[in-house]
Structures are given as C-alpha cells and as structure tokens.
Amino acid sequence: MRTIALVCGMGVAVFSSTAMAFGNQPDARPLDTAGYALLAVTVLGLAWQQRRPEAALAVCAGSAAAVFTLGYALALWPIPALIALFTTVADGRRAIGWAGAAFLVAVPGAVAVVRGEADVVIAVIVWTLVVLAAAQAAEVSRARRAYTAEVERRAADAERTREEEALRRAQEERLRVARELHDVTSHTVSVIALHAAVAAEAVERAGGPPEAATALRVIRTSSRQALSEMRAVLGVLRDGGETAQGRPGEGGHVPQPGSAQLPRLLRDAGLPVTLDVEGERRPLPPAADLTVYRVVQEALTNTLRHAGATTARVTLTYEAGAVTVRVDDDGRGDDGRGDDGREDDGRGGRGGRAPRGHGLTGMAERVAAVGGRLTTGNAPQGGFRVTARLPA
Image (cartoon, rainbow, N blue to C red; front, side):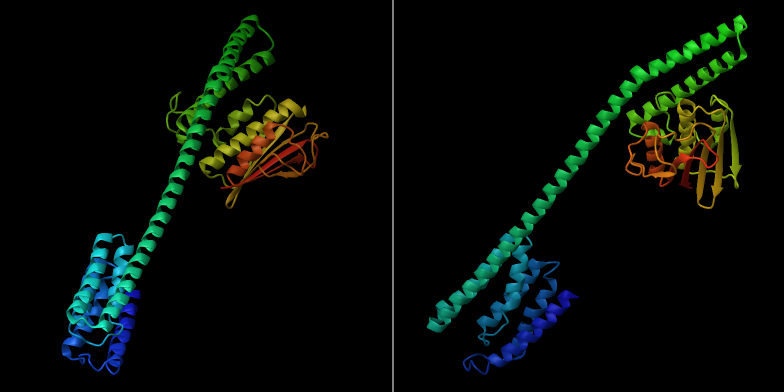
C-alpha cells in the first residue's frame, strides 16, 4: 500500500512539474509520446524499490538518463532515481548502488562536456552534489541499521549467556543438594529403617508390649516410604525435574503420592486420625493432588511434634473448581507462637511476624506455587487448624 501511494504521488509530481517547467525552459524539447512514456517508466520503476531495489534503480536511472539526453525540460523526474538509489545503498547493496550513482552523474557529465554550455555545467555540478548527498545519507542509514542490529544481537547473546549460566549454576546446586541428601540423610534414614526392623523382631520374640511393636512397625514403614520418596526427589534433582512427571529415576518408577494415599498416611500418623470427605470425589490435577498429601503430612507432623494432641481430623472438601483440605487437632493450639487465623502469602511472612519454622513456611510456599491459599491458627473449638484451598 505504501509503494502504491509512493508511485501515485511521484507520478503526479513528475508529470505536473515537467509540464509546468516547459513554460520556463523554451529551449527544452516539448513533451511528446516518447517523453510521456519515459516519465511513466521513471515513476513505475519505484514499484520494485521494496522487493528489488537494484531493479528499480536500473529502470529509474536509465529512463531518467534518457529524459535528460533527449533534452526534455528539467523538473522533478530525477527524484525516483534518487529514491531508488537511497533504497539500494541502505539495503546493503552498496556496489550496485554506487555504480548507479556513478551512472547518474556520468550521463549528464558527458552531455555537459559535449554541449560546453556554462549553465549546463553548473547544473551537472549541482546534480552531482545531490546524488552524492543521497548516496551518503543512504550509507549513514545502512550503518545505523547495522549498528542497531549488532547491538540487538549482542544483547540477545548476553541474555542467552546469562540464562545458560543461571541454568548451569542451578544444575550444580541441584547436584550438590542431591549428593548431600544421598550421603547424609538417605544413609541416616536407611539406618533407622534397618534398626526399626531389628527392634520390631526383638520385641515380638521377647513378647514385649503391643504398643511398642506397633510403633516400631510404623517407624519401619515410614522410613521405607521416606527412602522411596527421597529416591524420587534425588531423581528430580539430578534430572532437572523430569522425574517429577513419573519418569523412572534412580530408584525406578516412583509415583508421586496423592489424596488416594491419605488413608495409609493417616493410619501410620502416630495418633488417631479420622478422614472426612465432603462433596463428590474426583481426580485432581497432579500438582494439587500432591499438595493435598503434603499439607496433611506436614500438618500431622507438626501436630505430633508441637501440639501435644491426642486426636486429629482431616476434612477433604471437593468444590466446584477447587478442593479444600483442613487438618484440626485437639492440642495446645497456637499457644503464643503466632496470631490466630492468618493467611500465609507463601513467602514466610504472616502479618509482619517471624515464621515459626520451616514446616509452615514450606507448606505455604507449596500451596502458593499451585495458586492456592493457606490459613493457619487456632480452631474455634480449641486446638490448631491448618486449611489449604487449592484450585482444582
């Protein structure tokens, strides 16, 4: 569309200026059929100046040279050739562009030498300066565009280098954490599982208290489950997250736990826990399903460690577009360790007070990562309550 507008505008300017210039130049050749044809070719050559600027330069320059050589009135008909010259050089076709500039200067120069008229020589000198100015302006435009492209390329390279460096550092950190987990934590949990199994067998042989045997079985089961999940975590750390989607990791295929595993988790929780399910049970997105499990797991761990509770209740509510999991216990409640009924923003900052530990902070971060909201505080009937509402 822009090219059409340019051609139409130049056509009006060229034809009207040439027709008017003949009245001021009585020695010029009057416009005839050949003159109109050459002017038309000069203007129509600009139709190629976007896709084929060198072709446009050849057509416009050739027809303009013919108009000048045949002695038609001097007017605006050289402007299309200057536009084509500028476009050719600015587009990077410097050799063709400067060759066209030389041609635009050489033809009038030869005519000036043949005629030997002073006014013609002056006109040729002025024309030469105009051609050189157009070509030099095109060189400046080309250099500026090349400089801008180079700056953008270097910026993109620098950004890519920073991203690669960040990925490399993250991978190194994941590998370091994986080594620490494998060499320290994994070994310790393995020792716990082994000795729990030995202690359980010894209690059974000695006819010890049933409570001790039950507790040791829970320890052994939980230790084995912790080892299985730790192998999955190690696979995630070493493989950059692919194992989290269920790909076999170091320990083979280890599915992520979810709401379906809640009964087993509650059975081995170390205190009586009841599970209530409200609403129609349905499959949850993997991230939300895992978050439900982890919230219950961490909440019950905190209940055992801090609350002094004797019972707990887990309520799983399925709503339209969301799922809510609530964990209540009959323990001491918040007992001065923080404010009641606070929503955690997922960054460990609740109401300007310091977080109580890494457990609640990590729970809040996990809930926030899936777009949910975590609320912790004293329950209305006493004890402590953890509530997480997740989009699902």
